[in-house]
Length: 179
Image (cartoon, rainbow, N blue to C red; front, side, top):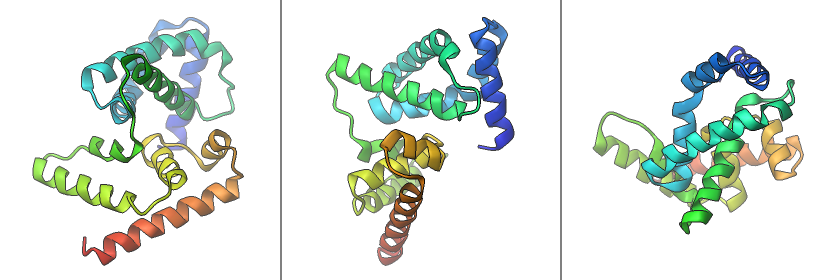
C-alpha cells in the first residue's frame, strides 16, 4: 500500500470522526475487500466474515474520534477487523488457526490456488508462532514494522530481523522442496 493511500485513509477516518457519511462510503470502497480478506482469514466462513466487516465499520464510526492522525490508519482498521473477527470466533465457539490464512490468496485457477496454498502452508510450517504472526501482519494486514512492533511489544529492529529471518526460512524451504 502506497503512502498516498495511507494518507487518504487517515483523512477519511478524520472525516468520519466529524460525522461525514460520504467519507465512510469512500473508506468502504477503498478497503472493504481487504477487510473481508482479513476477516475470512480468521473466521474461515464467508457469511460470518461479512458480518465481521459490517460490525467493524460500526466500530470504526464509533471509535474514529480516538484515532491518532499521524499513525497508520490502515493498520488501525485491520486491527479492528482482526479483533472483531476473534470476538466473533469466541461468540461462535470456532477455533482460529493462523496456519490457515493462506487460503485467502485469490487466483483465477482453482488448481493453481490449491498448489499455492499448499506451498505456503508447507513453508509456514518451518516458522515459529511469532514468525507466523509477523508474516501475517506484514503480508495480510499490511502492517509496517512499527505497527508490528507496537502490536507485539518487540523493538522495531527485532521485528525487522525476525521478518527477514522468517522470509529466508520460507525461501530456503521452498527452494529445497523444488517449488
